[in-house]
Length: 469
Image (cartoon, rainbow, N blue to C red):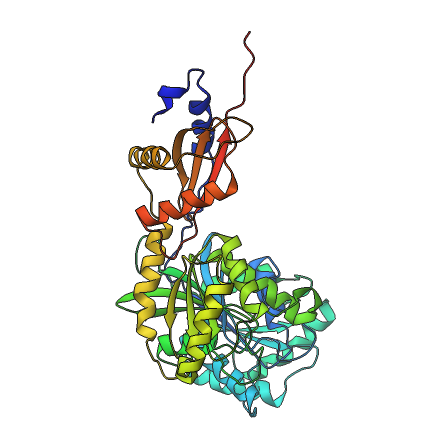
């Protein structure tokens, strides 16, 4: 089956030229960059400043303290120099409970940074917490850019001069909300960055990007901490602890991966307000940045509408997928029996997804995620040679012809794989192919070429009748 065998007017060649002009979904990633940590006590405007620097509303902002909880990374660019910006939760040395965990994450971010932006609310002045954080930063030996935020006029600039008493050098007055003097501040930050950026780390494409998705409190942050081997993100029995997507480079199975922990996707996003609404938006954006998604499902509970919505979200995004049934240590024989029945009944749209049974709490079978991720990504990028694809379809059509439609039997004239990530196949036909037959072709493509863990798309282009001149 070849283009020239059936096509005598150049139709297939024209369509192929159009397909070659379409962009692919391949994304480029980069290695580590110099790190700038934004720290300060709660509600001084750190996330607003981060949004101002990166030029978009990415960090969740709300007029209450404690919205940012984990350390969250973003890539920023100023005057052609790229660097990683780390937004942190409020750093309060006297905090207890959850606030103490948030403060610990902020302190870790400062320890790992090349430059520290210490944000102080100039409209309030120096507080005891500011002085305590300032003392820690002085002992760190790291370059500190003292940022006097919420300075909207020259009179307030004069008042910001009192921040000299923190012993961290000159305070730089800005208004994160209005952008006043933010460029001058970034010039100072660039001057404080290391003269030579670190060497590119990992493969040419950078570490593979893995998004952790699931309903609230299913164990996403616990899994990230488990694979990282340390407390990278907050874990708390209270649902909704994670709000911003959290990127972490993790060594797993001898390779470096970029794991993206996300906020739990709730039942009805349209009912969300404030920080939870923006957290849901960030989760969807994080999935678009990823190459493969690990969807965590609580194996000890019945599959819910939320679980199915999350699976549908990954399917629609076209990303590779691994379904991890978490909390397997809590599953007895009866529950395993009923779980298999639920999977057969409710996961009919994703029979291709790879399954792993794990326990993030105990570490049981977490190592099995690595071969599953590698296979899913390999399938996601698989390309079938055109000659092999057409040979396969010729044999398939001879054995099982398409159903007759309108008294005529459509023919598959030619086939090509238009793109990868995810694999997309285009069938050039003489007539309409029923959806059931297209699903049959997809199933046989999987049987022949694999594609385990990856969605594939089969579409058709029907040759229109052209009037003779």
